[in-house]
Length: 163
Length: 216
Image (cartoon, rainbow over all chains, first blue to last red; front, top):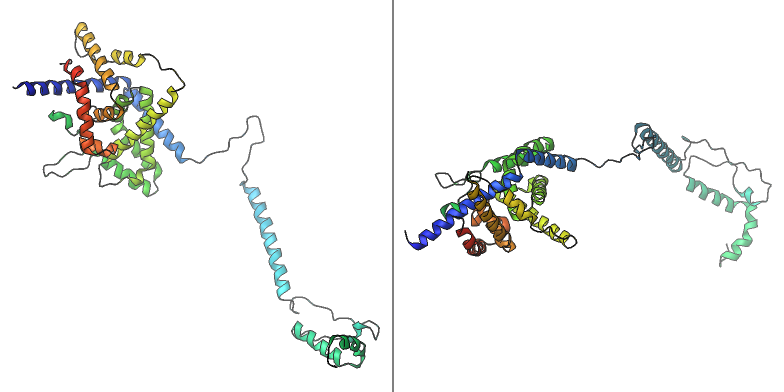
């Protein structure tokens, strides 16, 4: 065996001895009970990591701190929301569909004295027509009536050509 | 130094055909990964206990000899296992789990080392307390009390020399000697190139040659 081989063999033996001693030293600190305890801690930490955070009640407060998602509260909230929604929906429907099928409207009473502006509106309005058409008809009727001469003064002011 | 780079018995051993067979840890990790992916977290956690039991001692040896503190080693190993479970879905099954785990363990140990150095800025270190404890923990395989005492003294000297190595040399030396990892495995675990690993190992052995020579 050469001197170099001898030196390498000595180092190899020394490293083997180092390894054995290093393992023994570490195992002296971490025996089987320590390993078991560490395993338990690791699994406990993992279990905690998988759980949601909880709200702890303040000590001494007998009325327990309840989350806002208990059953009665949830039903009350749902009922209130449903009521609001139905109310809004009904209001919208009444606005969009104001026909006879929904509301019975009383005819416009023309109790105003003759000669006043209210008198130009016919007493009976055909409610079967579209509201806009009915309004235009009423305007035509009013313009063509003799009693509408009171409006001529306004026409003269607003139109450049004679009406 | 044939045994120095030998692969550990519980890591991917070579088969007769030269293929790398999956280690028990890799098989278990793959099973846990599939359980976690299918939403069976509780079952996965149960199986993870078996994986911890399989690797725990090895991990503690490495962490302890790198950090030279049992409490820090305990924390680093715990943190490493927690990280493994929380990121198990990132584990690539075609690669050895042991290498992936070693990398996570090295990072956890480095984090612990940084945390300790931050603490030591404000707290005065205990003088040689660790060395005294190391001597006391030296295994007593020799029946002769005189030889045992001598062996303890030598062990204390070796421990001090190893602890005095620069960080990277100490890490490479620990993974190589305590955990019996190959330069390739150390490279994968530390992010260094295999050539750099060999250089650090060579320098560490050169520095330790004197004190190691006294051991035999």
